[in-house]
Image (cartoon, rainbow, N blue to C red; front, top):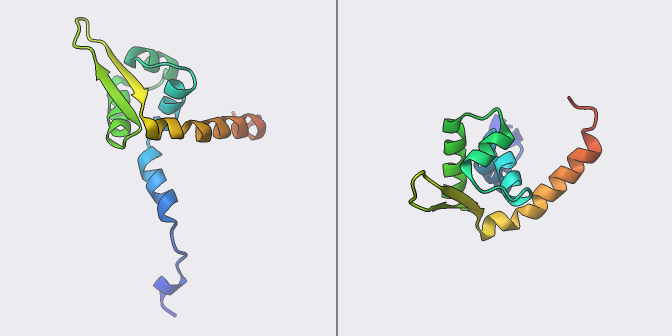
Length: 111
């Protein structure tokens, strides 16, 4: 039997989801936009705390490119940009809720 025949078939759905949401901050960004109703770049950065401006910008752009967010640029001075969920992003809220509930129940002792 060849080595490739022994390999377990990968789940394409989970693999794709991991590629889209695998960024270090993406789930947390979606959580703050969806659950906490935070839509502005500066507010997101303050709530996450440890993220750099460049990382937040990169993660937001990727979430926008993957269809989870819409970026609204108001073309004002000083600049004002807000992010909202797309229909795809809104459909992910129930998953975020479930993950939060599961974490609250099962990760109490994790630092």
